[in-house]
Image (cartoon, rainbow, N blue to C red):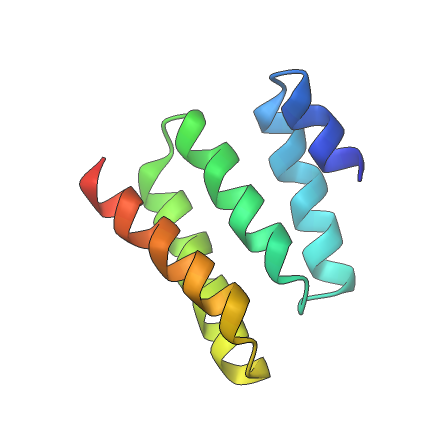
Length: 82
């Protein structure tokens, strides 16, 4: 929740740090990978954003979470185009 609030106020660097904390506690939080990658891309950290999306894709595949997998794959394609 804190990370999302940070993104609402254009504090993406702080948001990334909060997403990292959330993922360290609960690595199956698929939405955190998605939002972290988006924040990284807004910061111009494209390689990091792609790596985050890839990690989220792997996690969603391992967890059998089809909806998250589809959303993360779509985000990853968009990051390739940037």
